[in-house]
Image (cartoon, rainbow, N blue to C red; front, side, top):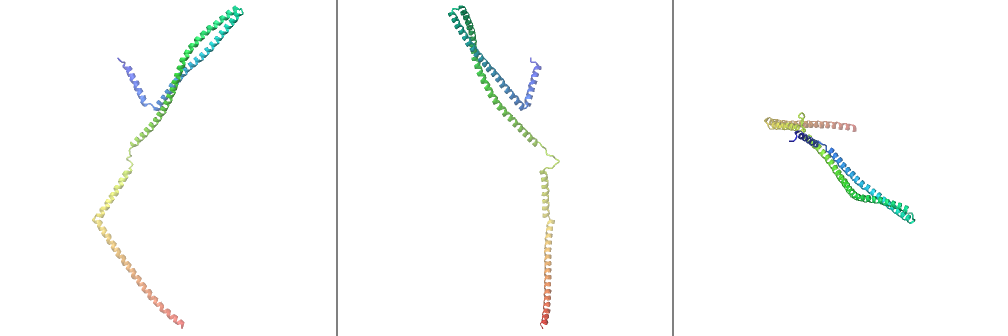
Length: 269
């Protein structure tokens, strides 16, 4: 039977992981992914460096053993030559010593040659491992570069998503704004003014079509006729007065003309 406490603890941890994942900042997660990718590439690079370093170390050891083998072989040849010369000179004791020395050099040469052969075999495997490690490191570098490009794209998409979310939230807030009832809207004011104007036009139309309106119109027409007649009378009076004034002026002119003639005759006489 399953332990209920262990089961509950696992459920709680899974629930917490889910909540954290839902509320996690995408930029933080992208940064974590970036660090993980770089860390993985660094580990692969370090491993490849160790493999390549092992190959280089074996190569240096192989070169050193080759030099030691050539040196031992040369010493052995020199000892044999000197032993042969001592034997030819009749110094057998020295010849025996030189032969023993040559055998010692030969024994050391065999040991070095065995080490050299083992080192060559190890170097062959190390060289193949180094080649594979270098390929893996290059593939890791290419993969890291591709991941960095994807990460930059994700960052751009996250920024765009945030901008779109902010725009959507702003639009929702604008749509959710409630008009203040204490302040009249332009549509309300327009409706009231049009209503009053329409009522005024209706009232005027009723007055014009009523009996009182027609009586007022007739009275206004009669007043206009009387005014025109009175104006004609005033104009006739003005014309009569102007005619009388003209006749008086003519008579006065004739009288003034006779007196002037007589006075001129007397002066001539």
